[in-house]
Image (tube, rainbow, N blue to C red; front, side, top):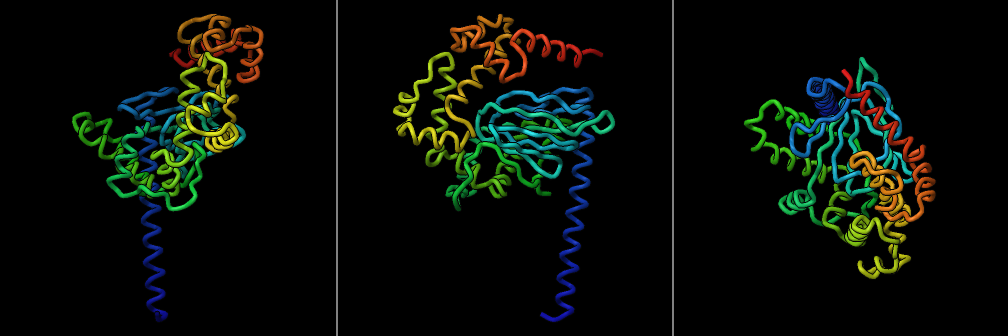
Length: 323
């Protein structure tokens, strides 16, 4: 290749990069403007099935929740998510992909009234992921997949383009029923062909030990109020106890006992908030026979005793709803 050919190639590459930068900038501005308009007050809305938009005008305290199979994108601001001892931070240049129901802790770290935190999350059905995998040929994992259930990767221009087109559907309700599924399939396809494709493929097809761990998680969630019988679970899913512990932590970043404990406390918190149960009754329903033991574990996880925590949450919710 001569000098002139090399220069032409470099100039062409620079033009492509500049075009992509301009597209990313335009898409991001459009996404910010749309979410800002659709969510005028702090909180979350679900304008389309499976698509939630979020807004926060200031950094938030650490909040406990349960992850799902979801694709998360930030238009403005940044956020941190903790899974066990692992920390994941993402911003407008990165997306987060969660692939299992796990107890997590998260908080918005970059937000202000002038530049609020604006984001979206799209729930992905496992059946849809499997369907896209089959139709696109992304079945086999190309290498040793990272099976951890949460990770962050760089947001590409094509993926951001699809996200913007998805949010545009909110303003075209007549088109949404027909195009929502198509654009969601495109997003899944781009995730499968991106940095996290192997991990999503590995978990979605429930290959190897991940299928068994998914079954173990389901058993734990179904029996939150029962004592942990790890031997029974290991036998049910066809694993040894030591193998179950090892692979469970590889996926969830915690032991089965830690998982059960956190999920019990999350459910007890929901019962007190949504069903007005007192602390003793909520603790009993999730398997705590000793109220003082429940209160100690609750305070250790959430930072306050049950009654004080629920009062704080209700006060905070009332303040957000006030005009």
